[in-house]
Image 1 (cartoon, rainbow, N blue to C red):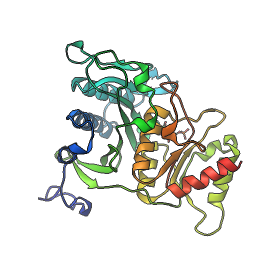
Image 2: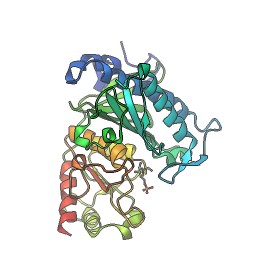
Image 3: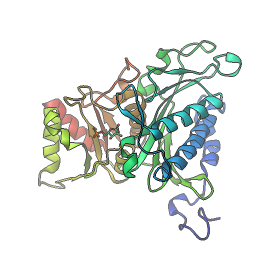
Image 4: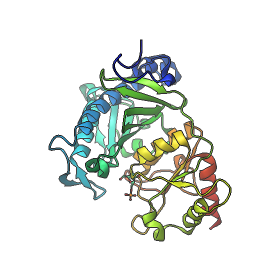
Length: 347
Ligand code: P6P
């Protein structure tokens, strides 16, 4: 059976097995040490919500859903209508599946408590999510994404979830992933046993294993950074960028910056590269949020043989103190991140 219909794209040689996401979850259920089906149901609920959001993203230009929703989120950013739609879709789907006891979202000031069946607070997981990252790109038809991070709760089952359940370091994540709504829609995720990518066949609404065991190239020649902020960068980052641009050896590197973390990360994971969002005058702690952007992307990066740091510390070892805290973020091919760190630490 070919993956795509007889009159559509040729089957992707990468997915010889034609494994669907559902089959993959079942086949790998035992990998998850708490395996009792909840994580599978959780990933399945994310899969469903991703299809709902994908449908809206793909028709954004055709219905009156473009433009700001007329509100701003806790970050002070204009909420795009699709931000609100995506946030609602993921929260509703996760809530209905009786799997999580709490959700934190970029679009919500505080975390949401889910008491579960009969208000018993007996669900085991918390999910942190950026429902539509890069949403400023929506109106100009550039790829956007959803980022999610999953932890097991640390407070006693049977009690309402607390902030402590969310303020866990990234090294405690049990799963993390992203959905990229691009030229094709993909789910890329890890449960700590490598990274796998699944591409949606929109004709039948099924995700297929198209990118098994994804690995970051050890090095690359792409750097992703908003150089418009150059004058505000730390000296170490300025020095690293000059290193990237110098005519020497395999350099100068190529600058590629989409303004959508998921898109820049995904390209760099396939081709090799480094993504940098340092602290700047406007964002003295950096712009990206530790809990639902940096930690999940760092988990994926490390599982794919890459590295993520703030220039000095491993992202996943940072002890969070606030739900929406920001950190400087350097992530990508391990040799490139190590080089950037030497400039940061040398300066
Ligand atoms: P800037 C999107 O808002 C985001 O969080 C990332 O997806 C993206 O890489 C970055 O911010 C873009 O920020 O300041 O360069 O526009």
